[in-house]
Length: 214
Image 1 (tube, rainbow, N blue to C red):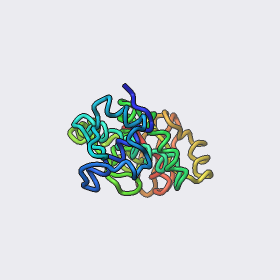
Image 2: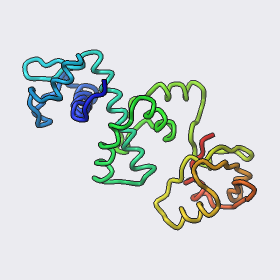
Image 3: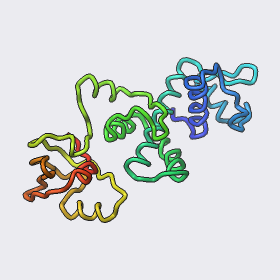
């Protein structure tokens, strides 16, 4: 059963308190919530937490749910700031909204697109998912910048990471669009790549902003 947004926020706060601040429980007053809040009842009804002496404690099932909830939140932060270039308070706000949409399976796709990041934009650890463990075991680099490819290698364009409209328009005019196939022809002295039947030369800085799914 999907949790409400408020219940997920409580799990996130509890996970941070227990795993990062090394506390045994969460004081609900820190979140400005009362113990009779419907979100607390939701979590206790699903046996994810228990309340003792005015404090919220994890049950074993709740600890894992909290881990996945904080994972989705920090992946959403990376997506907003790294790919969509939405930063500051607006980025944090959008990440908070988007994380609740990252259901199981969708979070793995976002994680793979981001190349399995280990920290959020604020340097906090992102709990690894099964996709991260599989990628490391198989040596799968996932999505990488064009500069990581060797001559002759190629893949599918995943996204362009730039906030410069002129660069974006230049790349789009070359056919560098998500979903298109791209092949690196050479990497020195400049990067030459092929999209369709056309070849283009760009510098290293621009090549770093093209991300390819191998």
